Length: 155
Image (cartoon, helix red, strand yellow):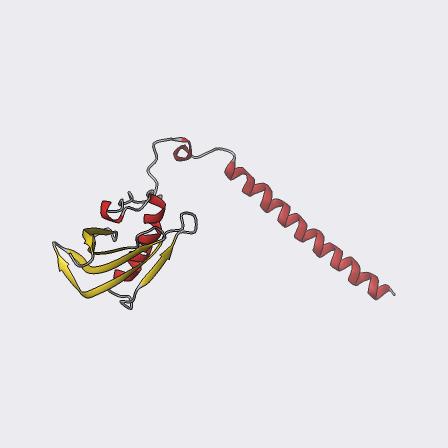
């Protein structure tokens, strides 16, 4: 019985030693945060924050889309025209407005004025009549696609 008691006492003393070391470490580390650094209290610090979202490119007038509808269409446009993509039709759908559409890339990717461009066909449904358009999308250096030369398909 004496042997079991001595193991219990040794375990207890090791536990007390660990607790004392932990307490000392916490006490010493707490002193570092008492006085704020001068750079943390200045309001003119320059930080490496991520800039706010890039300004939105509005829909071409010929597409007659609300900003919400254009957000859906623009996402499909970027995926459809991506030169690294599969060059297949991409659909979009705004469940709030009921508008939906499809963007189909046509022709090869080309470079114009330093931008990657591609022609496309667009169909916009959900309102009568269904609109069929053709146009050109170009991706600028900042990675955003802009749309130009949009007109009714076949003109």
